Image (cartoon, rainbow, N blue to C red; front, side, top):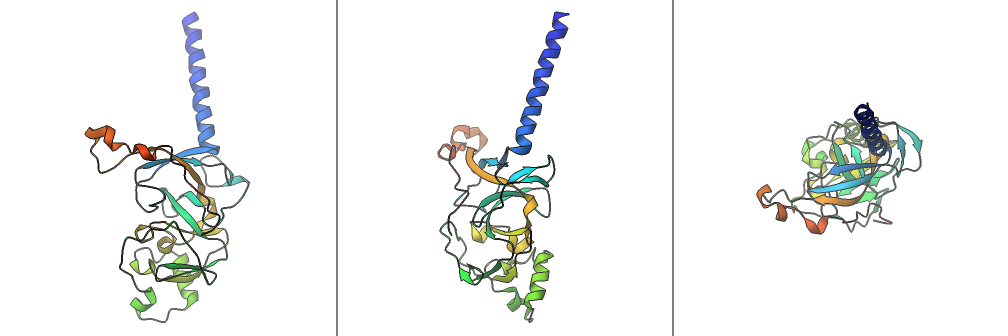
Length: 238
Protein backbone atom coordinates (compact mmCIF):
# COMPACT_ATOMS: atom_id res chain seq x y z
CA UNK A 1 0.00 0.00 0.00
CA UNK A 2 2.80 2.40 0.93
CA UNK A 3 4.68 1.61 -2.30
CA UNK A 4 1.56 2.28 -4.39
CA UNK A 5 0.91 5.58 -2.62
CA UNK A 6 4.52 6.63 -3.06
CA UNK A 7 4.34 5.78 -6.77
CA UNK A 8 1.29 8.00 -7.30
CA UNK A 9 2.89 10.84 -5.34
CA UNK A 10 5.98 10.66 -7.54
CA UNK A 11 3.89 10.45 -10.70
CA UNK A 12 1.89 13.49 -9.60
CA UNK A 13 5.13 15.40 -9.00
CA UNK A 14 6.39 14.54 -12.48
CA UNK A 15 3.11 15.61 -14.09
CA UNK A 16 3.08 18.90 -12.20
CA UNK A 17 6.69 19.49 -13.22
CA UNK A 18 5.97 18.78 -16.88
CA UNK A 19 2.91 21.05 -16.85
CA UNK A 20 4.96 23.81 -15.23
CA UNK A 21 7.66 23.53 -17.91
CA UNK A 22 5.02 23.56 -20.67
CA UNK A 23 3.41 26.63 -19.08
CA UNK A 24 6.73 28.49 -18.96
CA UNK A 25 7.51 27.38 -22.52
CA UNK A 26 4.12 28.51 -23.82
CA UNK A 27 4.06 31.98 -22.28
CA UNK A 28 7.46 33.12 -21.06
CA UNK A 29 10.61 31.45 -22.39
CA UNK A 30 11.72 29.36 -25.33
CA UNK A 31 15.09 28.28 -26.68
CA UNK A 32 16.43 28.75 -30.18
CA UNK A 33 19.47 27.28 -31.92
CA UNK A 34 21.14 29.49 -34.55
CA UNK A 35 21.99 27.33 -37.60
CA UNK A 36 23.19 30.05 -40.01
CA UNK A 37 25.34 33.17 -40.07
CA UNK A 38 22.60 35.56 -41.18
CA UNK A 39 22.88 37.64 -38.00
CA UNK A 40 26.68 37.73 -37.68
CA UNK A 41 28.36 39.73 -36.15
CA UNK A 42 25.55 40.15 -33.59
CA UNK A 43 24.55 36.49 -33.21
CA UNK A 44 26.88 33.67 -34.22
CA UNK A 45 26.39 30.26 -35.85
CA UNK A 46 26.06 27.63 -33.14
CA UNK A 47 24.62 29.96 -30.50
CA UNK A 48 21.78 28.60 -28.37
CA UNK A 49 19.55 31.46 -27.25
CA UNK A 50 17.10 32.04 -24.43
CA UNK A 51 14.12 33.86 -25.93
CA UNK A 52 11.70 36.10 -24.01
CA UNK A 53 8.20 35.24 -25.29
CA UNK A 54 6.50 37.63 -22.86
CA UNK A 55 7.87 40.93 -24.13
CA UNK A 56 5.15 41.67 -26.72
CA UNK A 57 2.27 39.79 -25.11
CA UNK A 58 0.87 36.33 -24.39
CA UNK A 59 -0.11 33.91 -27.13
CA UNK A 60 -2.67 31.15 -27.11
CA UNK A 61 -0.56 28.02 -26.52
CA UNK A 62 0.60 26.20 -29.66
CA UNK A 63 -0.69 28.98 -31.93
CA UNK A 64 0.58 32.29 -33.32
CA UNK A 65 -2.46 34.18 -32.00
CA UNK A 66 -2.08 36.72 -29.19
CA UNK A 67 -4.81 36.88 -26.57
CA UNK A 68 -3.02 39.63 -24.61
CA UNK A 69 -0.88 42.21 -26.41
CA UNK A 70 1.47 44.38 -24.31
CA UNK A 71 3.41 46.16 -27.04
CA UNK A 72 4.59 45.94 -30.63
CA UNK A 73 8.09 45.52 -32.05
CA UNK A 74 10.05 48.72 -32.44
CA UNK A 75 12.36 49.55 -35.29
CA UNK A 76 15.72 47.73 -34.97
CA UNK A 77 14.42 45.14 -32.47
CA UNK A 78 15.93 41.68 -32.94
CA UNK A 79 13.08 39.16 -33.06
CA UNK A 80 12.61 35.40 -33.21
CA UNK A 81 9.70 34.36 -35.41
CA UNK A 82 8.05 31.60 -37.39
CA UNK A 83 9.12 31.69 -41.04
CA UNK A 84 6.06 32.69 -43.14
CA UNK A 85 6.68 29.91 -45.68
CA UNK A 86 7.16 27.10 -43.17
CA UNK A 87 7.36 26.15 -39.52
CA UNK A 88 11.06 26.93 -39.04
CA UNK A 89 12.11 29.60 -36.52
CA UNK A 90 14.24 32.50 -37.77
CA UNK A 91 15.97 35.40 -36.02
CA UNK A 92 16.32 38.78 -37.78
CA UNK A 93 16.20 42.51 -37.11
CA UNK A 94 13.08 44.62 -37.61
CA UNK A 95 13.85 47.40 -40.09
CA UNK A 96 10.47 48.50 -41.42
CA UNK A 97 7.25 49.04 -39.48
CA UNK A 98 3.70 49.05 -40.91
CA UNK A 99 3.23 51.76 -43.59
CA UNK A 100 6.99 52.44 -43.85
CA UNK A 101 8.43 52.81 -47.34
CA UNK A 102 11.57 50.70 -47.68
CA UNK A 103 14.18 50.99 -50.40
CA UNK A 104 17.72 49.63 -50.71
CA UNK A 105 20.17 51.35 -53.06
CA UNK A 106 23.71 50.03 -53.42
CA UNK A 107 23.29 48.05 -50.16
CA UNK A 108 22.19 51.15 -48.22
CA UNK A 109 18.74 51.05 -46.58
CA UNK A 110 16.36 54.00 -46.84
CA UNK A 111 13.24 54.31 -44.71
CA UNK A 112 10.66 56.82 -45.90
CA UNK A 113 13.29 58.37 -48.14
CA UNK A 114 15.94 58.79 -45.43
CA UNK A 115 19.17 56.79 -45.22
CA UNK A 116 19.53 54.96 -41.91
CA UNK A 117 22.77 54.54 -40.00
CA UNK A 118 23.41 50.87 -39.25
CA UNK A 119 26.40 50.16 -37.02
CA UNK A 120 25.55 46.47 -36.57
CA UNK A 121 25.71 45.27 -40.19
CA UNK A 122 28.30 43.09 -41.88
CA UNK A 123 29.02 42.90 -45.62
CA UNK A 124 31.09 39.98 -46.89
CA UNK A 125 30.52 40.13 -50.65
CA UNK A 126 31.90 42.94 -52.81
CA UNK A 127 29.59 41.90 -55.64
CA UNK A 128 26.59 44.16 -56.17
CA UNK A 129 23.54 42.73 -57.89
CA UNK A 130 21.60 45.22 -60.04
CA UNK A 131 17.94 46.01 -59.47
CA UNK A 132 15.58 43.38 -60.85
CA UNK A 133 14.07 46.03 -63.12
CA UNK A 134 17.40 46.24 -64.95
CA UNK A 135 17.60 42.47 -65.33
CA UNK A 136 14.08 42.13 -66.70
CA UNK A 137 14.59 45.20 -68.87
CA UNK A 138 11.00 46.17 -68.19
CA UNK A 139 9.36 49.24 -66.77
CA UNK A 140 7.74 47.55 -63.77
CA UNK A 141 5.57 50.03 -61.89
CA UNK A 142 5.90 50.46 -58.12
CA UNK A 143 2.41 48.99 -57.77
CA UNK A 144 3.42 45.86 -59.71
CA UNK A 145 6.67 45.57 -57.74
CA UNK A 146 4.71 45.81 -54.49
CA UNK A 147 2.35 43.08 -55.67
CA UNK A 148 5.18 40.75 -56.66
CA UNK A 149 6.94 41.31 -53.34
CA UNK A 150 3.85 40.83 -51.14
CA UNK A 151 3.06 37.61 -53.00
CA UNK A 152 6.63 36.37 -52.42
CA UNK A 153 7.54 36.20 -56.11
CA UNK A 154 11.16 37.29 -55.48
CA UNK A 155 11.90 34.12 -53.52
CA UNK A 156 14.62 32.86 -55.85
CA UNK A 157 15.97 36.12 -57.24
CA UNK A 158 19.40 37.45 -56.12
CA UNK A 159 18.48 40.79 -57.68
CA UNK A 160 16.70 42.06 -54.59
CA UNK A 161 19.68 41.69 -52.26
CA UNK A 162 21.57 44.93 -52.91
CA UNK A 163 19.02 47.04 -54.77
CA UNK A 164 15.42 46.67 -53.70
CA UNK A 165 12.07 48.44 -53.70
CA UNK A 166 10.56 50.77 -53.02
CA UNK A 167 7.83 48.88 -51.21
CA UNK A 168 5.37 49.84 -48.47
CA UNK A 169 5.19 47.53 -45.45
CA UNK A 170 1.58 46.27 -45.14
CA UNK A 171 -0.56 46.72 -42.05
CA UNK A 172 0.08 44.20 -39.27
CA UNK A 173 3.45 43.29 -40.80
CA UNK A 174 7.10 44.28 -40.46
CA UNK A 175 10.12 44.18 -42.77
CA UNK A 176 13.09 42.25 -41.36
CA UNK A 177 16.71 41.92 -42.44
CA UNK A 178 19.70 39.92 -41.24
CA UNK A 179 22.68 41.88 -39.92
CA UNK A 180 24.96 39.82 -42.18
CA UNK A 181 23.33 41.56 -45.09
CA UNK A 182 24.99 39.68 -47.97
CA UNK A 183 24.14 36.26 -46.51
CA UNK A 184 20.62 36.46 -45.15
CA UNK A 185 17.29 34.99 -46.25
CA UNK A 186 14.88 37.73 -45.18
CA UNK A 187 12.04 40.06 -46.18
CA UNK A 188 13.79 41.11 -49.36
CA UNK A 189 13.24 37.61 -50.71
CA UNK A 190 10.13 36.22 -49.01
CA UNK A 191 8.09 39.33 -48.34
CA UNK A 192 6.45 40.88 -45.28
CA UNK A 193 6.53 39.24 -41.87
CA UNK A 194 3.12 39.11 -40.12
CA UNK A 195 3.32 40.48 -36.58
CA UNK A 196 1.55 37.40 -35.23
CA UNK A 197 4.47 35.23 -36.40
CA UNK A 198 6.84 36.92 -33.94
CA UNK A 199 7.55 34.75 -30.89
CA UNK A 200 9.79 37.04 -28.85
CA UNK A 201 13.26 38.50 -28.48
CA UNK A 202 16.63 36.81 -27.75
CA UNK A 203 18.04 37.62 -24.31
CA UNK A 204 21.35 35.79 -24.01
CA UNK A 205 23.45 32.88 -25.22
CA UNK A 206 23.21 29.93 -22.82
CA UNK A 207 25.33 27.55 -24.92
CA UNK A 208 27.41 27.77 -28.09
CA UNK A 209 29.32 25.27 -30.19
CA UNK A 210 31.53 25.43 -33.26
CA UNK A 211 30.33 23.42 -36.24
CA UNK A 212 33.90 23.29 -37.62
CA UNK A 213 35.38 21.42 -34.64
CA UNK A 214 34.75 17.64 -34.50
CA UNK A 215 32.74 16.22 -31.61
CA UNK A 216 35.78 14.16 -30.59
CA UNK A 217 37.39 17.46 -29.56
CA UNK A 218 34.41 18.34 -27.39
CA UNK A 219 36.14 20.79 -25.03
CA UNK A 220 37.38 22.95 -27.91
CA UNK A 221 34.07 22.57 -29.75
CA UNK A 222 32.38 24.62 -27.05
CA UNK A 223 32.65 28.38 -27.62
CA UNK A 224 33.17 29.27 -23.99
CA UNK A 225 33.48 33.01 -24.63
CA UNK A 226 29.94 33.08 -26.08
CA UNK A 227 28.24 31.43 -23.10
CA UNK A 228 26.40 34.05 -21.07
CA UNK A 229 26.77 36.66 -23.81
CA UNK A 230 23.88 39.16 -23.59
CA UNK A 231 22.06 40.03 -26.81
CA UNK A 232 21.33 43.72 -27.29
CA UNK A 233 17.95 43.05 -28.84
CA UNK A 234 16.78 46.67 -28.81
CA UNK A 235 18.68 49.49 -30.49
CA UNK A 236 17.80 53.06 -29.57
CA UNK A 237 18.77 54.16 -33.07
CA UNK A 238 20.24 52.70 -36.22
